[in-house]
Amino acid sequence: AAPHVHFDLWKKDISTEVARDIIIRRSGLRPQEFEFRYQGRKDRWSESTQRVSCRGAALWRVLENYPPGGSCWRRERVCIGDFKPADEPLRIGGHSGNQFTLALHLSENTRENREVVGRAADAVQR
Image 1 (cartoon, rainbow, N blue to C red):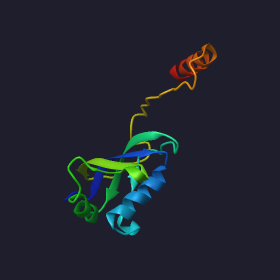
Image 2 (cartoon, one colour):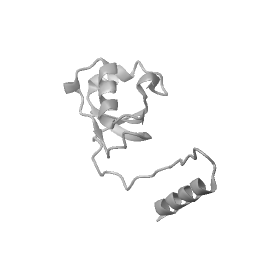
Image 3 (cartoon, rainbow, N blue to C red):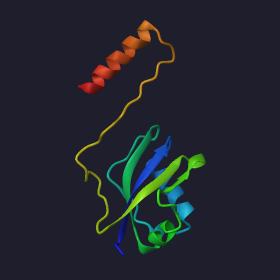
């Protein structure tokens, strides 16, 4: 078996480190059995998906019990899926750049709020 597992991590309103701790706790393995790596940290207050990697054959044994599409712990705001074997771990800065989808919500649909959102959208596009 490959020495590493790459998978998608979805998290909402928690840090990458907290999500990592939830995965470790849910796996039933000891933290020392993981070498949890990612290509960059995500905002704690966002809903985001990122690719992460872990080392160890022990993790493969745990993942065999998950459904093929992955697993979600909605109450803890973490989902994992798309597991792939890999020879190497992920490394910080190992991607060509981040891609974002931003959602701007108006509390009230007023002219002033639309102008603020318009200026924010213009600033992001620069």
